[in-house]
Image 1 (cartoon, rainbow, N blue to C red):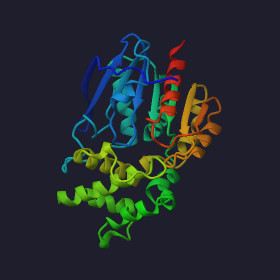
Image 2: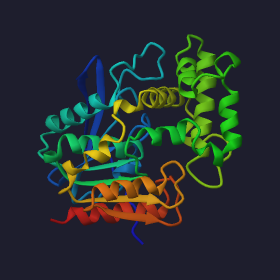
Image 3: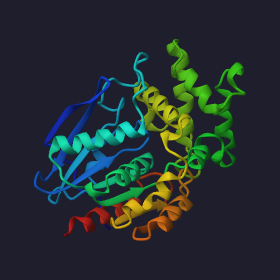
Length: 320
């Protein structure tokens, strides 16, 4: 059984100015002369993790990880009340990826992204296909409006009614009839820190429930840090409110731009956050891509079978 590669530390890291007062954290690890790969984390707002480094053979790859704007080690951090998210949007994240590539002297690279990171990977690859050697996506999303509405405006709520009710009940009565995303955006930007924290806790409790079946009880360990909770909830609701600034269905419609790029899609059969039908839709628009459905998995990328498929994909693309 294929397993994660051993844990490694970065050989270089830094903060890159990307404009609008933003500094983006980046790191490289593995073989400095190896095949270049960049990892696009999910969320949006989750930040890169040591787990991402271990998806790649460190003798074969030069792996680039970075924290997208206002999360992880990037600054200013979205947990601070006075941090503006006005310049945090998909087009600026695409520009940030290109700045990092140029800063590190990378000509072309493999792009790997999961969940929200798969939408960002598609948007980047369709904008700069000549910079992409291969694409690996897991927990596949394509940025369509129905995908955002499925998870955040009640679609999947029919499968998680108790958890959805808790999310709705945490909204004060005057805002309860508003669009749920608008309501949480208001709460997460309230001057009262107690209101912001209560909203972030309710939001992240909902996010904790839906990756696996049966629903997880309580708060996922990754949301235990209050600063992480607030930053994550602020960035997610900011993107959902604007449908990630993407024209509906544009990444499927423009998939011809990546028609000749090899790729692998990995999705859990029981992924309720990103149903496998979305990956099939992308496969129809991008016939060359290899679609792998993992039967015993949901949206949890740390599932051993999903991990195995991701490592198999990076191993396969490491070979000339």
